[in-house]
Length: 221
Ligand SMILES: [Ca+2]
Ligand SMILES: [Ca+2]
Image (cartoon, rainbow, N blue to C red; front, side):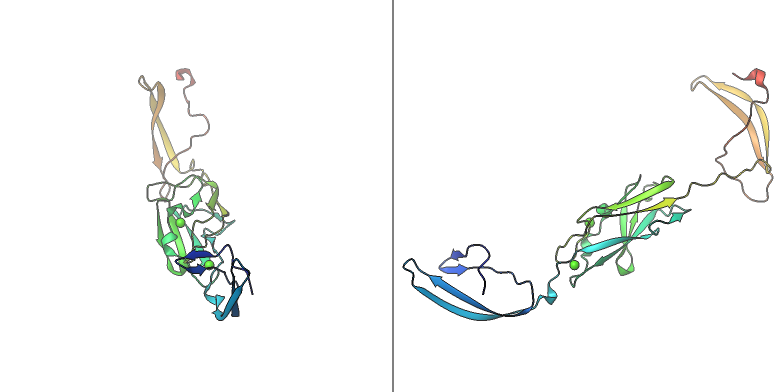
């Protein structure tokens, strides 16, 4: 019916051969042994093969949150990845770890397993935050495996974090200028004054000064 894959090995008088079945069915195995003089003896037996429990298909990951290609206004501090396994084995949760994905500009600190094999990859546990712009999420081959050891393929996805739009607060604040002071240690001239918020809503720094603030040009260093 088939030739053994590789040479049969002889162990303590027992001849061992192997064959891998890749489809289900009932097979007859015929074994023939021939000696140096050309005399042969044979025997046969039947094997029942059920490949439905074999899993040769790897898991796959998809960026879940933020959605791939989306533009977001907030830095969540994590990304969520939906992992799924093709085939009957199912995912091996012991293969989820911070090395599964890399994220532009930050390092993953820890993972949380949410329901439905969604894995949350935290990067803000050490205070890191994303730099606004295009953020790439990349996963190397073999990052996550199923219970038969099939490793996931490499994949990549991206989303965009909005740069916060500057808000003009010049009509809401009053700036009072006190003067200039030179810091000999840093060599920097500092502008001293107060900024008073007259708006009904909170106004938080950072302030971006624009336009001339040197109201006394003759004292400019
Ligand atoms: Ca699988
Ligand atoms: Ca892993």
